[in-house]
Image (cartoon, rainbow, N blue to C red):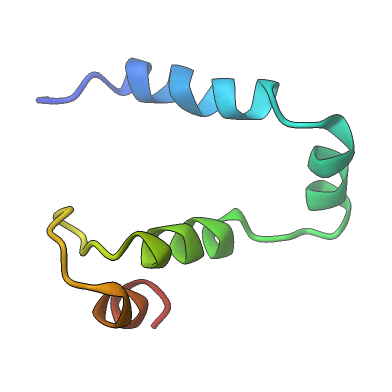
Length: 65
C-alpha cells in the first residue's frame, strides 16, 4: 500500500472534532448524505479524479453526474 490510511483518518477525524455540534446533529437527524457535500466541494475545485486541472464546468460534470 502506497498511502498510510491512518494519516487520512486523523485528518478526517480532525475535521469533525472542530465542527460545531449543532451542525453534526443536524447532519445526523436529517440524514444528509456526506457524499453530496464532498462531490460539490470537489466540483468547485475544478480538478478531475487524478487531481488534474480540467476547469469548473468539466469538474462539475465529473463530480456531480
